[in-house]
Image (cartoon, rainbow, N blue to C red; front, side):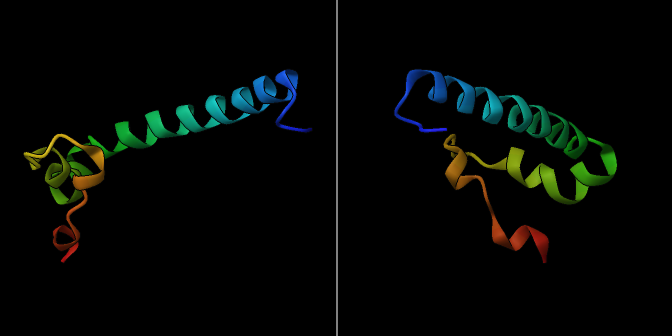
Length: 62
């Protein structure tokens, strides 16, 4: 399925956006469970930098 064809681009966007957004939503929702939130995800919300690429803090896992 060539990406340079409009039909192919639309199909690829749907094949990507559907599963990826679905999985991201549920994975992120799971991170808000009290067990995972207090151990891992709270560090993400504690970040004062608003850009997502800077929200990763490697020391939070040690």
